[in-house]
Image (cartoon, rainbow, N blue to C red):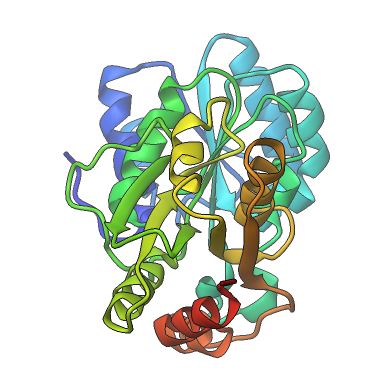
Length: 312
């Protein structure tokens, strides 16, 4: 297995490892091979690497053509450049045709904006892709899960969007932990006062918040949602049934992501109070930890909000 650290490296490692076994895998780059840490793949498989330059729309179109010929292209670049700049192409030429193009978008969320700030922070991507029929949406929380998510994307029929980070993610899962096909992994089971759902790169903070609440006499269940808007939410619904006090915490805009998904499931299956903790403004530049704390993702702030919002 190729070694890796952050989620970008995890993508590149998974691609390189799978390519040995699956000759149909191709990488399509929009001047993003270095950003995706995939130079080793391009060097080892030059005939399976397509460089399109800074032309995300053309890269998605090229990937659609490649997929229509029976190959499995992975398109990797900054997630906003995919979901915004190539939005129409992802919708019409991949989603509508239900082609097996696999997208990996990096620098998702607020926490990737250490240098570039708002132009390279993307917290609208899930809302955009969730509007496309036929897409599977994977939201791995750390490098281990990103490696497994990329492998799962190859095995999943149709188009897949994998949300990856900037390399500043905190490790939560042990090595080799599978990417849950049920869409959920429960990390804390203290009790039923509330259920805390997280996805992506704030999972470690949600787990710490659950621990803090337990120390303060509030016993919650904390879970990671790694597949959004999946076809079978039955396991998620089982965890939702633990309490009628549900909280969602995500490094994404408050609309269109995890909070919207859990709210929909509650409305359609078992009414509950849903409190969404997410972004309501644009971000700014700064180190990941300081940004997360400043925008309300400190474990202490999450725990405080849960205590304040629980309805007796």
